[in-house]
Length: 357
Image (tube, rainbow, N blue to C red):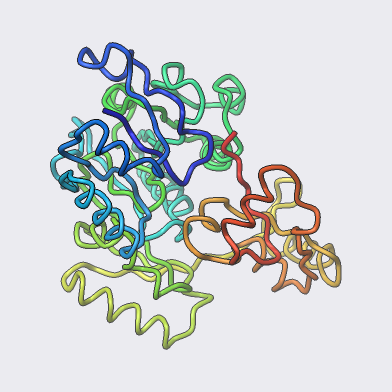
């Protein structure tokens, strides 16, 4: 009958186009607000509701289930084993247990390591299509001008730019069968660059799942993060350099309960200044000189701050570590950002990059 939408602004009210929906949906598939879920089930005598969201806390998941079954439909969750597309090339997937654990930097490290061993790689990014879905069916990015050509949002640019600078080919869009087949033509290895805490869209030969040492209580409380952990070939704990020993021990014990035989790798996640494209100790000294005792506006990854109950991100931490005085953006907010603060009251002295438009 329809899809329902939440989390991402301005998606409800649109249509999933007939060109992508297939022959059974000549008019496309309407996209309705999730608030109408129970009404839609009753009005259309809906028999089945399939969950296709990620980053849902377990209490919210059960609440959704209760709404669906009370309205008269069956609540269903598909196994990723039944939905993952198989590739003719080896696939390495990088997924997380929550948003903001450090998947992107891990993916770039995997890409660099494979390229150093002589492999051609193609990175396929979890979907972020907020524009014309037919135009965004299958996109390839190899240079920065491709981002302008494809009318990328801030959120998309944030994910693609560093890959492009590293010389990585990126594929993204809506039609994940088509995208994979195109990527296979030029890659020895396909890398799945996951979003949120979603499961991989492709069947991986090596499944890397990233956890966050700074938020050990967030690591197995949101669907489908625990599913990722149970499917993982390797569990990578990120940000170890900033974590307390007791919290790290507690996290490892929790992971052992969920995945007793999966290897656990500990990784540092170092924050660096980027001044005119330069990195390193000298640049960090320059950054300290710029930031210390100055008023600083921290702008951090939007999904990290709005999907995850986190009040602050990496920019905030870096500025604080270098002695900056964090500015509260709230008095200066305009337009839709005012609604963001109302919806996510945990935000403090940090501006989420809400680049969905």
